[in-house]
Length: 475
Image (cartoon, rainbow, N blue to C red; front, side, top):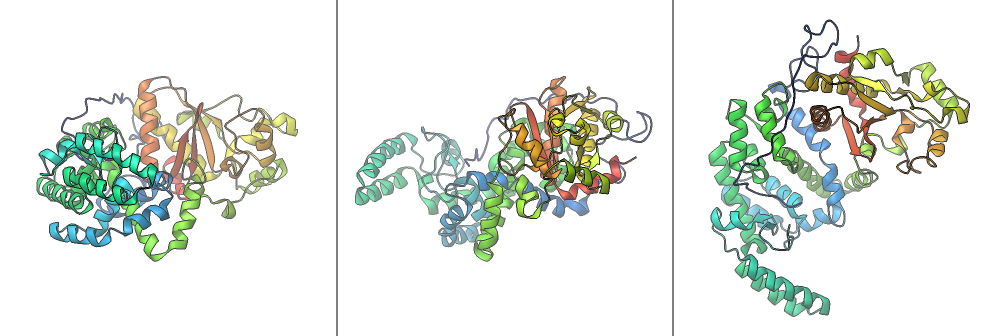
């Protein structure tokens, strides 16, 4: 969970997005505004407004929490327990700089999971210590003693002492390293991090922007704000109101940074929630940890197995079509909105004495979101449709698939619930690929999907809350 803390040079990565004529949703191609989250579309619940900032930010924290649960050494509870030991030091440092203690504690959780010896690279020129400070930033901005070469030498001795189990020598070596490289000294690292946040707050004028800059860098964030055209705004506004077709320069600036830099504040807020649960509701934290780590995405958080209907066989799936729990894919409507149905979808249906159309359906909110994705990608890139390769299955079909597809799971598959679909990872242009990436990331930030890259497809699981999209995709 290493942070870059402050980038001195702006990364010279240019995101090329071709913006062309907008997609037909309800009328001719010139009459409808672009269907892209964050732009002004009638009835679009994802369009940015000031009154929704807090809700958007809260959803983004939930949508980007998975990586913290997945990468916390020993699990979220163990990491939170390590971090909590530093609470007195956190409060003292935060008080000195008028920084919110919960935010500083969340930063420790996100950056090092409470490990004062954590290092991003073996040379120690990168991020290191409890708050993952770059060597250059520590020396040049934060007035710290930073000696990567000396710390490396002590580190080698430390590893030998640890292998021997010499606790007394280990502590002496750690103390020596703390003296020559203050990034490994928790009180000094926390104090330095607070100095950074104070400097950033003075430069940027807001606490949320200061925290966001800890990963992105002050200069990079200032450039994005200038691209947006206003500097005295919240990070929620900058992030959610910048898209490939609206404040496009600001969006390209944020996207070009990579390394999940644009979502850093949301992950800080997710870490705050983990620390809150650790103290107030440990059973809920354990439950969330189990769900977050069940798959390579947060899909079981959206639809836990013990709370979600699955279809056992074709008969149950037929009944679901009959009563409207599953809706057949409308080929023509989806094609108009930028989604084509793969000819091979449902290819094993004959072995169950069923038509392929049996396995071409979704829950209504999932279908609405699929149409929303297709329309958004089409409006940004203007390219040929994306291809949906898989939608609903029943458990019998899933078992047949195991012999054909190494990616198929023997356990709980969200395809057997009607909440998941797969999009072929074959794009007609780079512009289409980047537009699809934008839609995935933005919908995740609204906590409407969990998604993961598979070798041949992007696997997407849709939240029940996606029913909000019906107003902008239903004819």
